[in-house]
Length: 629
Image (tube, rainbow, N blue to C red; front, side, top):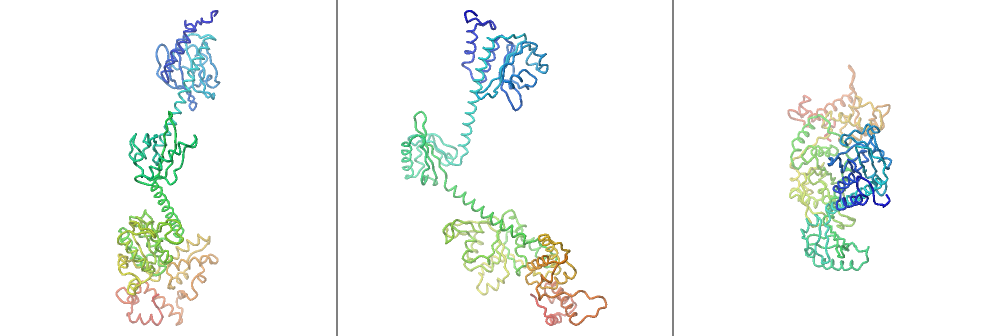
């Protein structure tokens, strides 16, 4: 090479070969660039094939981007590099030159798409951080001896290919960032508007379009209140005067749009020496409404946590006495309706349990059951408890709070001890029942609710109405479907069934090994009148379990001191004293009265069950001092 120009490669001079490298690819990018590069590479080196690939490290495969072989383009495909010269080229990041006998050296590399290759020359393409981008190679069907000048030209082609790879990856990264930014802006709930120096709209996101429906070139000032228009213009001038890097601000007091008050921020930018301003607006009403919903859900969650803690005090409805079966039938009939229910019964008869059963059997079962104990809340706080209050409505009202009726919307509200409600609150409750609306304390805004009311009391509301302590109109509103709960003493052997259930629960809770109710225990439980009803029975059994001795319940410690002690059945042939006979008679009459729901006369009355006249039974009850508790 005396003249420095001759380069006998595929019959081309050095100048022509270099011109092929440059001119063949200078006007192309991407797929067309790689196509021009591989075809020119094969022609310059005089090989029958050349290809450029992208390396996929996760699968250890090469993805062919362009493959020129035997005067045509091979359709792109992927192939595994295992057992091929490409594997060494990729893994060791170096030249791999197989001058001849490639099939003997790599017997597993028999893909027919490469033809009858005899020789191979390949080089890994690397990024600036040395990561493998892909690979460039040539094949030939004849030997390919080493040629330093050919290698130099090959390396120029490889540098061009690597540069295009890097350009494409950078371009892809830019597109991905732009797409992420587009998704970020288009998915934002806030209205984002770009304005030019004249405060005309240049760009806007979907949230802004939904609220303002602006058009490009439109003066954005028309969407603002007059004071806010002047305020925005002044802020723009202030940003213009700020140094670069400080041209952004949170707008104090926000802006008043023609639709809603908005929190706002403003930022200045430049493009082609033109100023643009990005205005971000957030609907304050939406935020306040979201905060109200969060507060409401928080209050409901706290209420439900309290309810869960109290649920352990209630068991399923247990018993099969006639009075209880009548109540269960009433529950079944009324639960599926939306009728207001008034539950009547002595303290401890399970009024809340019945209310829960009504709610559970209703179409509202998937909505909350909210309880209000009208006797447990001070009268001064009852209105707020019912209807909620605004911040500052009274001393101690440090924040807005939803009342129980708001929490019960679409569900059921249980008003326990309704007879203890003040006359003032009775009037406001009547309005909710009649019209389904109320105002929170300290607010003039009317709230609509759809609530089913279940009320309960141990008082005689009819008598309270007569004495002026309860509104007659409210009484009639509540008394749509009354359910009277029987006292425990009227439920016969239900007392034993309930006691057995309580023994199991409290023995498990307190870790006691209790054998259960003995025969004497059953008699004593039946003999007692249970003025506190099921709640008293529950407490008695828990005490008896806690103080159990040698696995046996201690009713001596649990029952009141003056409670009657049931006499055991006398042995056959035993002679009883007058006191023992009176005790047996007393117990027998009590059982008859309980079975008859304390009706003395009539076909199913206690007298008929005992086979005596009602007047005789009445006399015996007086003599034995038997009274309905």
